[in-house]
Length: 515
Image (tube, rainbow, N blue to C red; front, side, top):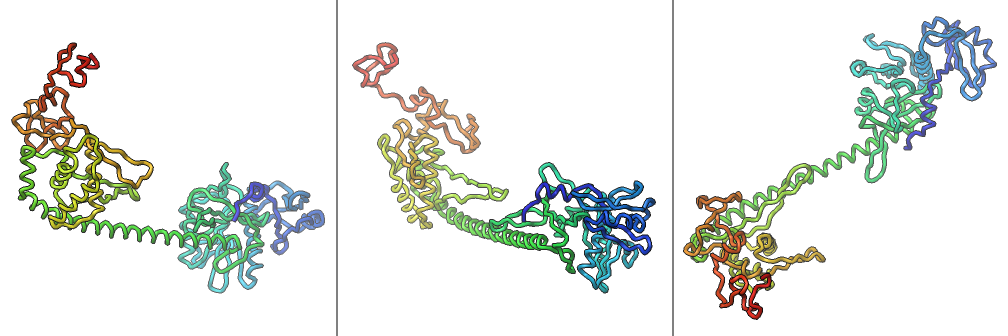
């Protein structure tokens, strides 16, 4: 369904008021001037025809031959009624003539009131007890008046079709070539009624439409915004049905609208099904988390009273370092405008138990820059889970161990090399330098007073140890402070320049490199 061409729109919107109808003075019958006959009937027209606008004071007409345009009438004396009145009257007569040709058995009258006498239709088509009103609108139309008039027709069971004028305020086109719909026209389109314009001179009809995609194909639909495309077609290509005016263009528009609405319903059903699936997954995840929490609480109770925990606390002077009690953070991701929690890997064991087991068995005391055995760490966790009688999941265990090792790498307690060639391959972890591979907290007898600073859970430091915080680890201390915790071994060599201890490897030079 192509859009209008600029020259077609210009012809459809032509403001030239060409009168093609005259009224017989003797009997009031309408006379349609055929194109090309202006010169032949000029004398007869002057004597027998008058203006079709009711009450025109200068009603006498003459014919005008237009070689490049359609022949028409004009007043012998300039008329004082606006051209819009002539267009409106001719639109009524043109539409009446076409309706009679489409429904010879029906009664087609102009300016006929409804049964309640509260509305007068421009053109009324009556078939027995059924009535169809056609309203022609050239001037500006208030939305309240339109709504009141339409409601009155509906209450009286009278169908109504609105036809807007091809010139004037009812057809405004922007610089981009799109039609700007009025509030009344947008209301019609929202009710799935076609927005139609009528040109009584060229006998053309235009309809507003827009383009949407249904299964990757373009289809015409009723406009849903303030702008619309325009399709122009001939009134001779239309037919009259009980539902109103129809043509191939209008049928394609109705079919496209039906297909688009069906596609919208299908998409809405898919979205609802997906949301229900996500809700079920979330409920299942909540149930799993509740179940795992119960298993974890049971494991914690067993761990609290075990001798392994007592030995571990004794090893660290009654307080475990933070990196052996680290909790995997919960992460979220945005989904359809809200935050959705992502599942995090879990091990159904106390954090202290499995993190301390891996640290003591695989990391602490490892050779400098030695490659750490990731599979061995996961096997250690599996053995602990089997011994505790909790479910084992190698995938979950691997994910949790990797998250913890990444945390250690951030603290520079281990070294990590990530493989960017193959994204699915696990990173490789290595033992840290020897001065990093040491207990975070020494026993109280050798821990100096200035290092007894505590860190709260929010990261702030205080001299008050209340609140279960932990002491500063060595990598946060200065070199002199670390030497007070772990005094430098005497080598027997001193620098001749600064007098400080000298490493045996520099004994031949007798001084430090920077000295």
